Length: 307
Image (cartoon, rainbow, N blue to C red):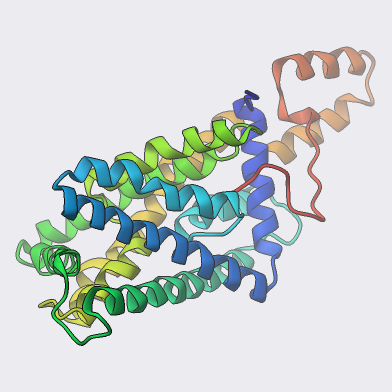
């Protein structure tokens, strides 16, 4: 199985972020819509497994199937672009501006919500025989999740809001780790195994994922759960989005970039050294150590092996 060393991994992350910031609105929306739809369908599957078997660990073990499929297809989640987009801006890639980053985040948010809400409606129909019967046991379980993760936090006031935010941070620490690990090998089996581990962890621990919640909470409301849209927005979605942003950027993107990255700066230094005696020897040494100075990015097409 191929293994991508950290320096090259960071270059792939920056290449991926730069590529996503250049995508058209149409492509961004389609990829975000389908990414959320696949992830949230897997969430419905995991809740079904947990409810029917009484084994939450089994549901968490199986949930990553949706994450793996969507990233193998090259679709997008807001949690992923929170991590990759800023690196392209920090690395000063052509066209990677703060405005382009916010545009990308906004489009992915809209696409993700559309895909998640579609699955919420479809599953609500599935759980109620087209709203002609009371929700099934799984539907009731989803409703209870929505109630517990809105009103349940509100009951604790500021401490509940802090807990919600921290769960959002911890979630995208793991989810963005899964996004990055999708690039750590060019072997499909290795990619799947690497992605599976952190996603299983986040789901079993009950961390807060903004896109999964775009499915769980509208589902709960459609199925008659006892909370409101404002409860959902104030006591879950908004703090979760902020926590996801902080977790992915602070604990995944920046540590890797600062210690292994800055690919553009390294390429500039490499170019300067090429004009001095002994440059070929230095270049050969960098190639042996895996320095990203020897790696070039094709900015006109989607980078190979990136999420």
